[in-house]
Length: 120
Image 1 (cartoon, rainbow, N blue to C red):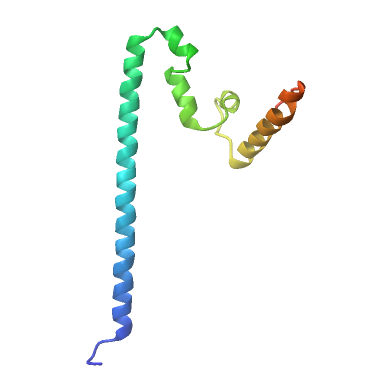
Image 2 (spheres, rainbow, N blue to C red):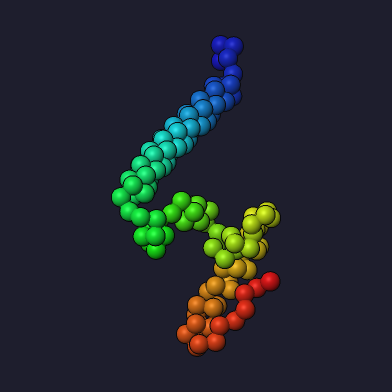
């Protein structure tokens, strides 16, 4: 074959294809990060405008305070956030237990009028 190995050519093509996939994934991640940054900047600007337009009591009543935004961004049940202050964030097992309790409480307890105690 004239001194060159067909296996090397296939490896080169595979390497090139892999580099292209990685490069494309990196571009997608950069675009995603840029969109997230733009959204955050827009949200910060909107929050700033709201704080100037409305009194704190109205913002608090509509859950528009910075603390409310942090609560939403954390994506952990609010009552767990209050309990977790000063300790590490709950692990997946703890979150699953909490989510199951919330579902049971919504489906059974609230509608039956018999709320149960939260999990320990």
